[in-house]
Length: 260
Image (cartoon, rainbow, N blue to C red; front, side):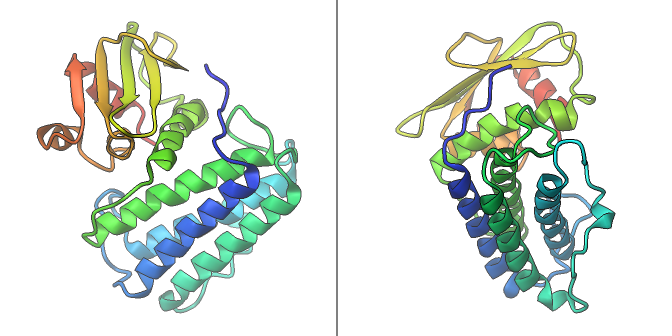
């Protein structure tokens, strides 16, 4: 497995996830919070906001607890949820800012419990950027807004997804027979290449160019939408948003096995 590759500083990751939370709060402020979220079955926008606010608080709590004190039970957190759901947008934005301020003050090297390969606070800054960004996409999709992702954020999101999967989905990534999927962001976009091997023990991955049994290629934002199942792979292929070369079954197997 490749080591984490941080595109930005710890402080910058924190700033970016606060900006994403602010975008969600602005969307929610004028929305019906009972709106279903198609990309998160059985969720409404209100449930999405609560989930994300808990995630932000949990990230800070796991740094406070240190490497041997986690994982912190989410139910133990003092969340200060508003009695009126109309207060959820403001609650979400304020909570993101508090957590980011704490992570910045702790510093990137602060020991922390994490479910990734880096037992330090820097893990949580990056994790919260992509957790928040993906749920911003969910919010936009639920509201009928075409989601947009900066190419550099999308490339970092693909890389981070591969980095954290062993900790969150290792038990569910089905064994393979050595099939390989090459993922490539292309065109005038931010470059990125990764190869995933579906091995008998689960999966492994590395950065760089390689020939795979299947290759998924396209602009970084579109590739990320497919990799996170925020856009159906078949629909993306039919629309020409991404291209697939080789065995479609390898892509489908990976997408089914890597669901978070």
